[in-house]
Image (cartoon, rainbow over all chains, first blue to last red):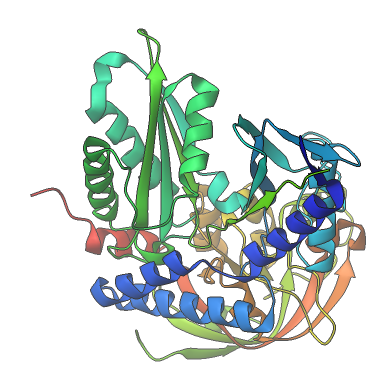
Length: 285
Length: 187
């Protein structure tokens, strides 16, 4: 059985937390430039130009692009033939978050209890989603999530009779209600099917997909295209100042569900939708 | 986009009455920061008849919780937070003389009514442009509630701080007019 030391995991998480907050991913930057060419609103174009400038400053000066450096969300795939040595995996991930948010001068935005609301001071704990997969590698995705956008998501337990149109209308209405709050241009993650929590998990996971890449299944890709068109007809535009660039992408994932239901979840990512990943290989012991 | 209007704080009634929704404004002078926890404390202070951390008359509050400053920086990244969470508190501060708020996102009817009744303006800063905005902040000093960390009340001095008038003192709203202009129904 191959092994991996917790120190290696801690160091990787630390680095990913910082890089995710300093370096806007290339696909979103490309999305800004493409939007700039077609956006008819002068205010909208001005916003896009400033967002590009902001991302360049953050990258060059090694500072966070946004002050809301998020709650750390991790998607972890652990190979079933890999042995973590030297401590617990969850503890190692939280230690990596603790170090990353300290060394990277990132904002500590986590409160220990939702009612008492006292800051934990180190941005832990993270929200961690584990998946056990074949093999002996560890795949880590760090996706810090700001709450300007997180607060604007929604879930509807649709009736099967509402069908595809009902699901699509809920997505469009959710984006419409959000207006300028989630810092458009946004990425819209849509999860349909499964159970209540499965749909919301899928909606969040969709935000990791590269902007411009569609669902590999053609009928779902077509739905994504139609949703993007309808969302961009709302008129919200960059920052909600009016325009046709409300979203850069709508990403959809589906899952088998129950005969009696059709859960539809929408998770909105801001224009600084952040995620960095790494695959760590196990070593022979 | 129209030529930017330079405004020196404090934001008096005379100055704010010249501003219209959609105006591009560069703010100069002192502004104060405050977000969820600081607003809660300020309103509690008011209700208990205590003093506020600063004299509210003709002042501007920026809804922000910056990242920690690195060495050599005045302040960390400092973009606006979602203003809607302050909707429960702003209508209590506006009658005390608050004339400007800077944030992002929608405001409630109660806030807009208070703005119209007492004379106040809601500015939008670009959400998520925290690195860019920080460059327009010349100095930052915590003046109240240091225990709140990023949520402490700070006195900022800003130079050509870029904002947009979202809602003016007459209640005209760029979020509504901008959206209406570009909203298209399916052909």
